[in-house]
Length: 112
Length: 113
Image 1: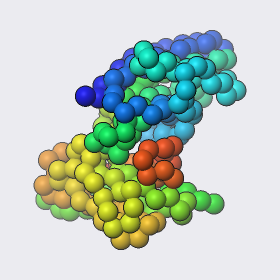
Image 2: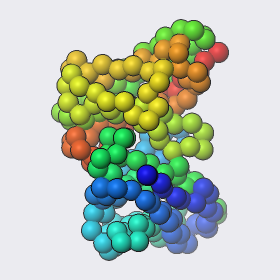
Image 3: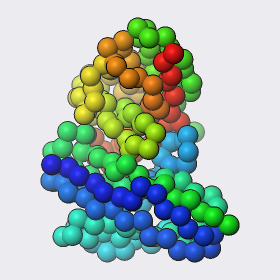
Image 4: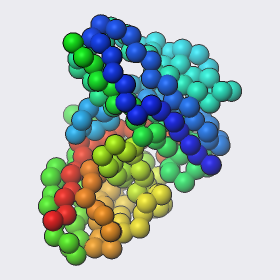
């Protein structure tokens, strides 16, 4: 089956670091995407990991461990504009969803 | 500029009426998708199309229909058979038909009165 687990909500302070975890169980895994979605808007691409390890892109980094079915998104130097939902999306070949499945998202609130 | 255009952005419909949401892309992508998003929920796939004149049902296709007569267009019809159609609908496309980065439209918010 397919199962993705992310925390529902998180709160952090401006300037701090926050880590959003995602665990998944899929068959035919072939990489994992993270998207950012501001309220009422469309998701936008943040990162893609296909190999184990850490991918860094400015203030955002994403980590993947395929053997553990685990990924995290790390946000540094938090800004108020980072308040959004973060969606974990493994690529699942052979699944029923066009090979892309989504977690329910983690709503991050950044406080002053 | 290339992108995906959805229309209308907001739509109100009476119960029992069909409504069609438009999705057009000029990115030359083969694959297109329709997702539904409810408050506090992730994206759930309604239909997807990996190539012109072909499409597959997603997990929640009941009460919806699509067509893919042109590469750039993938309209979604919400029929009266859809029991709870009020939602935020997102259209997306990707270069890779087998799963790749999704480019999303701005969404259409449908409210059934």
